[in-house]
Length: 115
Image 1 (spheres, rainbow, N blue to C red):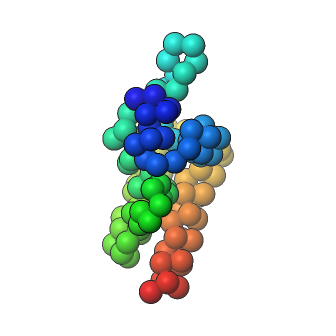
Image 2 (image 1 turned 60 degrees about the vertical axis):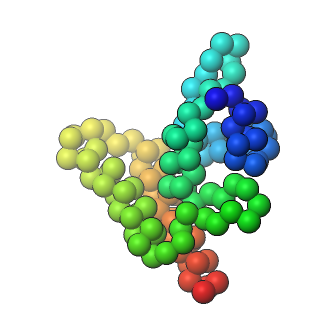
């Protein structure tokens, strides 16, 4: 799926995907002529795990506490697996995991305040 196709599917601008999401780790690959290629299922999973909303009025994936808990647990499990398999976890990777956990916590706080 191209950048334009993805932006239309999700209801966001090309610039949002190119300048914000890719910088935050949105899964993609590069095709011929350095064009972006996306797999919708991978991007949707990434969107859900990062609590991102797309189309106007679309609710965040974090609609209940169990979802928050599962998202945080998933990030911690990824770190635990890397450590158990004696994979090197670089400071940058650790910061990325901690940033995701922080976003989950912030989304939970917003959810609690709004209810």
